Length: 150
Image 1 (spheres, rainbow, N blue to C red):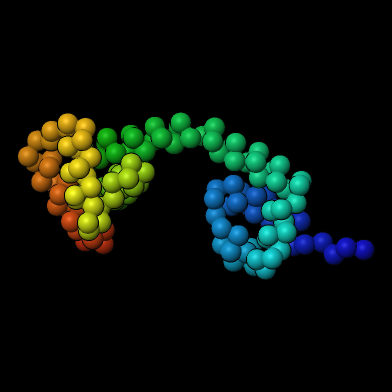
Image 2 (cartoon, rainbow, N blue to C red):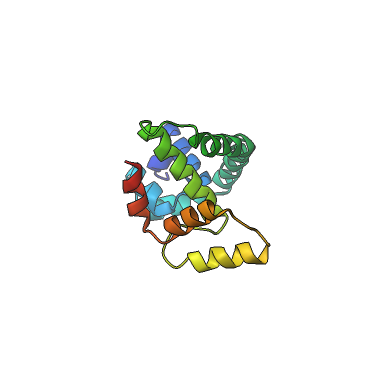
C-alpha cells in the first residue's frame, strides 16, 4: 500500500495549491508546509493536482480587474493623505513602486537615463517639479525612499 503524503491532507493540499497558483516557488511551499521539496515537486506534477492549480489560477485571474482598481485607487488617493497618515502613505508608496516596476520604471540607481529615454521617445513633457521629483526618487536607493516615508 502506497504511503500518503502530508500534502494529501485537505488543509495542506489547499494551501499548497493556493501557493503554487499565486506563483510561489516549490522551495517556499516546502518550507511553509514543512515537507521536502521533492514531495512538493511530485505533488504539483500529478495530473489531478495540475487541474486544481489551473482552476485556482483562473480564480485568481478573475479578481485581477478589482485588484488593479484597488491599487489605482490607493495610488490616486495618496496625494490627499495627510502627512501624519504614515501607514496610508507607505501603502500608497508601495503600490506606486509596484506599478513603476510593472511598467519597467524602477526607483533604483541607473534607471534615470532609461526613464528619460522613454519620456523623450514618447514626446512626454513633464513639468519641472515632476521631473525633479522623478529624478530624485530614481537616483535614491529604495531604502532611502522608505525611510523618508516614516
